[in-house]
Length: 114
Length: 112
Image 1 (cartoon, each protein chain N blue to C red):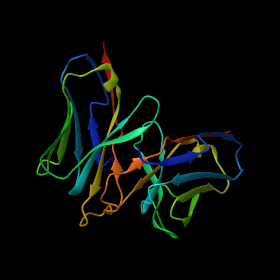
Image 2: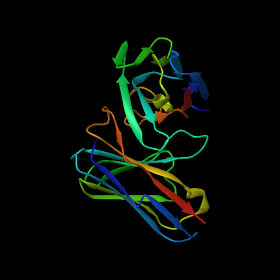
Image 3: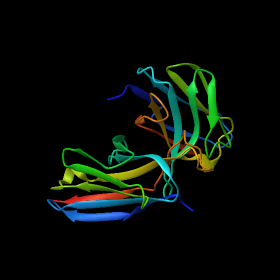
Image 4: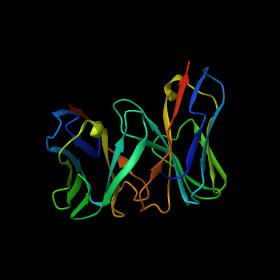
């Protein structure tokens, strides 16, 4: 069982569309990360959050601690946003999973068509 | 971009041979990590280090060993490579365990 679930696994959209990628997790966390993996393979950290919302350019990340759910939104999507988006969590110190390590979802592959 | 260099970037070798991957950082970050990435799985932690000579196992540590004799270098060794260790390996660094991780460009390793 994967403690971190992402949906959808694959998403194709037209340029300009509003994109939402979801991440849910099973137990309490200390922090949640969103990362982007480019088609060439490089991985970049986008956000780290433990509550509320963060925004950077056209990217917005939200988290609902009570519902154990986070979303990554992309406004005015562009072909250069095509990538795999990865959610990762650091479980809380009271969990059985250890809180010094990240547990990763399997990623959402986003393709933006011009 | 964080100064992280992985070497080699690509390697093909035979079953049973030893393999060492190197991660070098210029950021003086305390934490260093080795992950493997395989289709259908998220990134999985192999080993990590929280200081010179301080290392701990991750979820997929069997068949791997690590060493960190200097802050800037974290080595991953496959003592006797198997085909199941064919994967893409990523090194990451962070200032603390509760800080964002910065990733290297990855090493594509094929064990034939």
